[in-house]
Length: 332
Length: 240
Image (cartoon, rainbow over all chains, first blue to last red; front, side, top):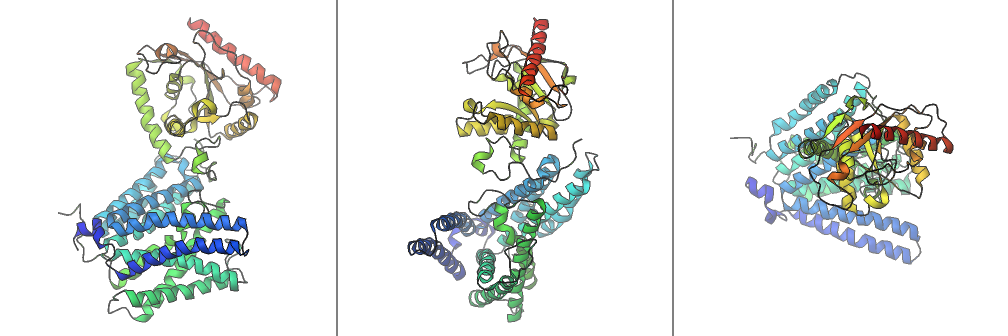
């Protein structure tokens, strides 16, 4: 596959059977679930208020699917562009949550860093992509010193660094998957498994959960839900991994189980990380972008830690985009 | 320098549809960038097209909070007054505008909030409550305001009576009020005309006035309004 085909080759959208299966099942879920809600309301299982809430949430899911799926399917360029905007908006939300946005120049430095990371991803320049983390910290430290006001220096610089690492570097790994020729099934599998992981934790916790996982951080999470999510997500990853992917020879079955456990645990810790941040500040939602869900961060929190973990896990066995030409724009 | 505050944005819980017309609005990243660009553009425009002159720029404080007041004769007034503000403070200085006349259409409102950082005030309903919110934000020291105490555009000849609302903001506080006299704006862009004419504009900035010895009650608000009106009138008489 040539670079241009990878970036813009929409004819390759359904090359992999997993992509077809995933798109069909996502469409099915999004069509069936509102109908199911209406039926449950008709039969009197749920009241009108709950029905409205669920329908608002499903509508948001439909909008999310209609934005994310085409961007991933149409070509790697659109996927990278989408993840750039997600990173940028996630950071802006974080900056408004923490008050970092009032330090205009420092905040702007982080935004420049996020732009540069997206460019290295598009360029497929892995060396520079990795270097962006320390270089970004250098830039943030320097810009933090320049106004000559040491009061609150640690707060401002630490907030900017955390924001840059979480939303620039960690989420950047999600975009970097696009440099692989099989990025479509990889990204769809990753994003939908992480979403399923949340659903598993919620459902198992609702039915079996008694003891709280960490009540001071997130009062609704239970130990049963967390364990159930790990088991069910691992099972999902194992089944999908063995039936849809040509696994590299080094990758034995237990590595796939390990990958599933890693995915589930990182997803739940990403969720708890954002909960801790919000609890520390004393707010409930990170924003108001997505009706029924809260802010963008409330939706993508589980992906924050999962993206780099999954990236390096897969990278350890097969590498990401090694057969593609690197440094598309900056190389000779 | 203002210390860093580990506080979420005041308008964090407002939706995108209500944020731009909230009295608690705080400029974000996009507004900051657009204001950096537009303020440079406006300064160049005023200097070249209107050959504008400033007198007493040293009276404008280098740190928030403060309130600039001026006689209001033209839409150009706000552009002239915002150009007096140091760029560093630009996003924290909010010109107050009447919600009913400026924010009728949504695109226009978004343009005004992002380019000029206008904060909207509803003229009649819930006015008291909004003023109280503004007073608290001023007392916390994070913002400065640009206010036309006449409440509407005058004819350019005579000052109209000042509304007492300004007294509610500054009575019993150390917030300085800086009177600014604008001349030539009405000739450049009078009420009803759409394109500005290249006539000369000048700004005179008076010494800051404090109202810490006034009690925060209705009667002294009126006295504060009168006192400000007299000072601006005095500047106008001296200029004529």
